[in-house]
Length: 97
Image (tube, rainbow, N blue to C red; front, side, top):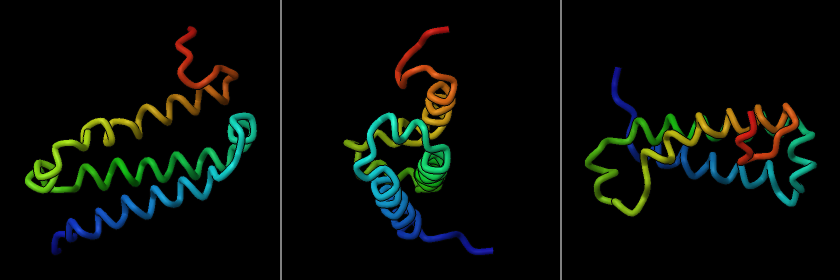
């Protein structure tokens, strides 16, 4: 089985980012938090972004040190937890117990 080209992972990143923009569009915070399907679609795209970043070779990422690659990869876990908080009635960024 051959390795997938880094170019394809970069394409995945761009495509997922565009998809997130289209899913969110002009939606308000309340519209977004009350639309579980939209939330799920956005979460899925962040998962794709995190996976794609994780598959990029380190030498390629080192060529662009201004990009916080690890933060992007880790964000997929954070966004899932944040959306869960929204569904539970807490605001994004809220750290209430």
